[in-house]
Length: 164
Image (cartoon, rainbow, N blue to C red):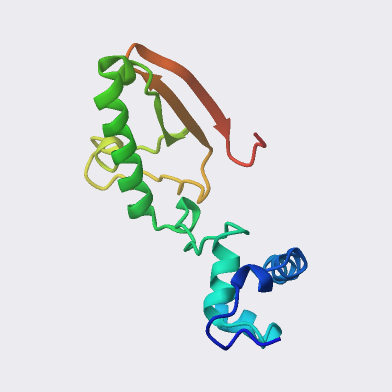
């Protein structure tokens, strides 16, 4: 029986078996087009296939959403700013009291003297003072500080090459 002729009763053509077969094809490839689907069901009109996919099966064609992990740093920053502004609009100053932030910096444990600090008064003809060159990799400590509106929450000191 062909559904290409007008006047054919659609309810006679749309059987549970046909709906099940179309559902299996859709589930096997969710990025199908109705034209792709018609290759498997050549005796059924495109409009009827579309009707089966959208009405009894309740499928919708949706585009993929952008997710933050594929965004640039600037886009992520803008999303966070918008989220903060929306939360501030709904929660007010209570929201600001719950924000915590942090920063980190390297602290040298051996501070080398500046050239000015090493100046000495000497007699004319005295040998120049000698100063050893500081090591290339001096001892450093990573200082990480977290705080909120009420003050410092945590200070963490971690030496170079120390595991966290």
